[in-house]
Image 1 (cartoon, rainbow, N blue to C red):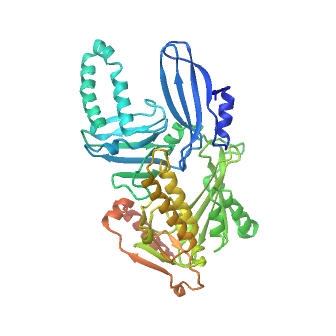
Image 2: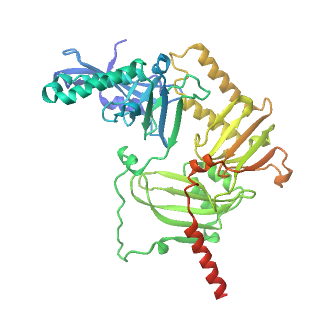
Image 3: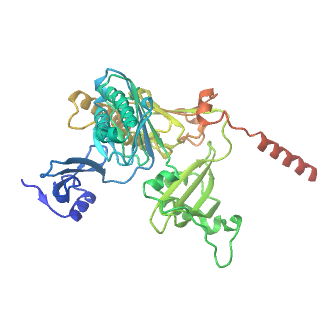
Length: 491
């Protein structure tokens, strides 16, 4: 069947459509090499358990110019991603790992002090070897001109190309770092769903500069003076009593956030006695909006601060659950023996510092893998399954051998068995900051024999990772101490 030639608007409509069987589109476009018209082909495709991507390939019949790139048809991810892969010498399998590099991603090789900025290479679907070879070819393309203009620079680049091609051929060990603020890049893990000892994946919160570089920030927020004059921050905070706001309005405020589970879970324990509303700025469009906040106490746990904001201008919504009070002196390990439907319905608060283990299926997730969650035990397993499928995007690719495909399908079936309660299993949540919680199914937590809490002393390494070793509170302690002394004198 001949490819269908349509205008660009049809391509955009195909990107937003839910139909995965999108046709191939051809658009006549200008060749930047010879000035004649060539053909650009567009294909919207879905990488299983990853996301939709738009593949484009240009070819000029006049001069033979060809190029291709990949763009993401979906939204940016909630957080950025950082991949660190250690590539040993002489291991061709590591160099053949598939890589999705978005147009916002940066590639670094610390051993060579080499960096490929986002603007140097557009989005691509390649391998580690392919990315390095392409970078070497692009550096070598203008060497003849450099030798005429700047012989010293050209000679230095020639020496560097020898090292770069040695890495691409697998003759030298190196570290391959892929950092993407949009979170749309990916490096294949052939050991999936098991962790890869040579591959480290970290999710991080984007900085204001990174959000601006993605085009999702209008600019620096400006302070506008009203006709009545500028009010103090303390005057801008509105404290509304429980009688005028109530649990219903507070519930609605939190439900406007991006997680309905937060509202459904927290309000089972207590209603907010006081909801504070204060002015804020939308993180997407920099328009003024309101942020609502209240403190609630979860029995047998601690105080938590719930914050929610929504923007009427662009529709951006956000909600957060933060621990209240001081940092606990000890870490906490929670064990739940899951054997019936009541255990699956237990409420779970998992902080971003908590790790998860399920010994029955040899599953272990490092802290920060899923971020902070307010869900149930069953919902937590569903989140784990979704996260693994998203991270290991090429697990069901066409090039995957049957052994690895069956391995992943078997592991996913074992995750489903956990929710089906085919046999009892154990959930272990280890949180060095003790900010995680699993609710009891009995009126008194002491009567719940399937739920145990174990406190432990944090190691020096854990405190260092959390930044507690460098925390100095002596000045604050002295200030509080002097305030207590003054108050006692006045009394």
